[in-house]
Length: 100
Image (cartoon, rainbow, N blue to C red; front, side):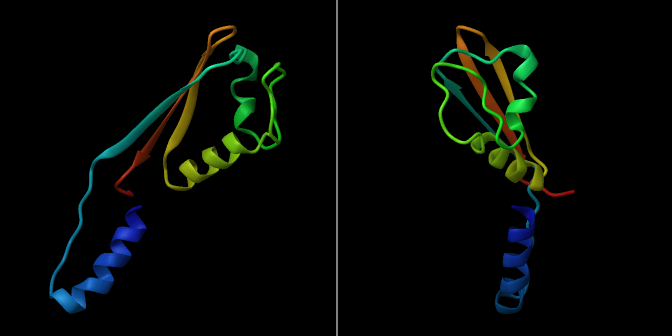
């Protein structure tokens, strides 16, 4: 997001005369997923491409979390999961608004 804002400032500065952006906030997001939960030993692997955890509710190609993880990492963010087998999972992510 930082590079995008810098580009906007650079494009607008000649028109407006002067502009600056300094963001120090962080976007936090989370979501709960009902289901069987993810075993402790599988939690790191779920962010790798084509990994699917064995479950009655498993569907898809195993790419969604891998893609989300790569996008967040490319923007200096992170994604994580808290899960309990039999109780479902909770995913959270952080995304800095300021690039260092």
